Image (tube, rainbow, N blue to C red; front, side, top):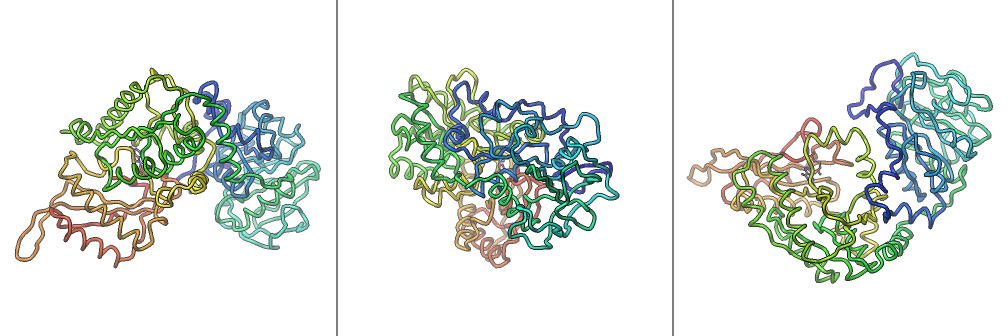
Length: 561
Ligand code: XMP
């Protein structure tokens, strides 16, 4: 993606990052910084075990992470690094090739991020996408100009050199997704045009030095053959064989956790969510009883949740679990509180206090295990996350005070969510746990509008239970990012039998999403909605009205508070 001079592209989620914003030395370095001197990072395990790595150099496109996902889906390990990452870091990954992402800048503007010299000096294959293509064009002696019009959306790609290795299994003409204002006016010496679209005479270019450029975005779903082009690049051009598999990751990770922890003690906050469940199981398989999990029941969980979590981890998997039923503590702390952020802070603060108390009782603890994932690592380095964090502060164990001196153990920090699920399944976790929808740390407290009470919690649990079971029965659970009930602070008049009622209003919400950054309300079947509504008003005393939330994010958020 490039901005050009033609104004902002018509995409709401467009990430504006200037070269100045990307001052972080490298994501890897930050990962290590966070993890202390001796991080147990899957990436390190991988780079030692596996020599097949593709490095994606990030110029700030909203799709950069998607490129990395696509490469991993093609079974080649891939890391996304900032464009100013020093060569030593890259060298330790021993890459087989580079992909240059798109980005919001225009190459002819001053002080824009450029491709590091080592990319060319390494003589490794390079694939520049959109801005990445324009940057390499400029640096290698070609010319990039502002296009006559911003090209955004579908275009048809026509191959002029179908014999190019990039085009194996690609039809002569196929749809591609464009998002650029600048164009290649003159290719650098040694390059030739391999394909064109109506508005881009050089939609794909290549040189016999294995350097390629694509004007469109192969990583997005709107380019149906894009993944094949990426596959051709990594397999045909870079010579990868595809050794990134989850079972390789798991076995490497088990070995490395064992080595890193030695005879040390590890604690882990278990919530029952996918990430903490997988991280705990992985570490438990590596070091057994050296791991202790702390499971705090804050009284804000859904029906049966605490029991089920305990059953899986304590009874079935035989883990050391310290179970703390702190429901009363949380409830009394929340008394009188109505503001969402105040509630969040109170819950986060109380959780940390309890966690610390329990950890202290254990004596010396060497490691704290966390279910940090790759998108979290990357997001924590971007300016976007700072802005969005102000919308709602999400509590997790990351907020532990610095007085606690553990090293962090984050074996999932180089994995995407779908990869984490596969690790979980491979470790034998039940499907129900691995496919669980996300549930916020502050739990039902942010789904009860206003003050939280025992009575309201019971009521919400009952309504939520009905909705969740009906969603599961309709086999929609996995298709939805989240589906849940909210207890509003509205009471309305109703009539039941011969009586007038004055009862609570329950809202139900179901959304589809890929990453929770944006979400669409789910078009649930009317009959299902009718059945859920009917059951809730009949089975949950005190509720006489049910509404379905038909707002997307933005402008709403997924949660109501
Ligand atoms: P929003 O409501 O901001 O939610 O659209 C986006 C995603 O984050 C979850 N969420 C939270 N998770 N602590 C959490 O651990 C929180 O305070 C919190 N608030 C929202 C929400 O469930 C959705 O998946």
